[in-house]
Image: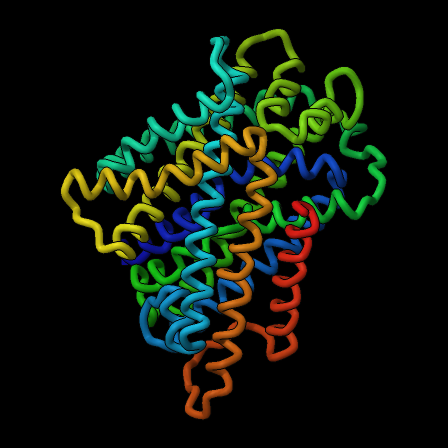
Length: 401
């Protein structure tokens, strides 16, 4: 019983931990462009969508009788085109995320360090240092991530406590005009922040496909924790920093929504250095833990795809394949943290929404379909999820093109 409870709690924390990463750094910047209360509604809507498609993926896993990755499910039920689409979207998603983290890391280091180095050089240093852990693979990433994750949560709590002293409800109730371009930016970013779906098949195998009730609770409760923390984080940031003024979000928007500019404005709230150290440290730690997790996943994917050797030479080549493209993208878009994240939303929507919905639609049409669990809703709900995924893709394309 204790072991079962431990798996239950541990799985919830895995789901929550995947959400509490670098993506949350973009939330205040995009939320400030639509206002707190509209952001609150958008958070709930995106959480609802992502919790629902997680339950669709659970249905797929339970139909098969064990954990099955989305790419494998696509190949089995949708054929060659499904396999190619899932594999390509997954690969591009990981590359886009690493590029966004690299761009953000360089921007924060530029804000934090008073040294005569360009953002591009700092981006290369950020990715290169973390790439060393990826090169030494799972054990090195595991140990580094334990330390960094603990420090990240500690810094987050301290940042929220520090910002609490600057909250003004006038800022939260500011009359922000409804603008289509602001919503078209916010929706893909908010959507991407609830990304934990790459590990669903792992959780199913870990907890056991026979524990259906617990699995449902794990995915719903695990995704609820980031929702609560995101709302608290945005509440503190938007409550502390006004939309306009000498120290405001307007200065961040003028810098092309740059992450370093956002942290710089927060740090201007007080002359005490503690807030600057805490916010910059939390942001850097969030980017680092996300980089390590995604980097390791991409490393393993490429090693399997190209059948790379596990010796030092093989790991070096795989590490270079993992890092060179994201670094190149970040050099082209040095202030493109949010821009590249919105690109990632396109791939993530295909991988986490469209493909699971299509697979469930297919298996529900099979005559001998006979498992005890189905995700809530019928065909209309599935079509709604598909339409939502398509809308997110179109908004991300509109924002960037």
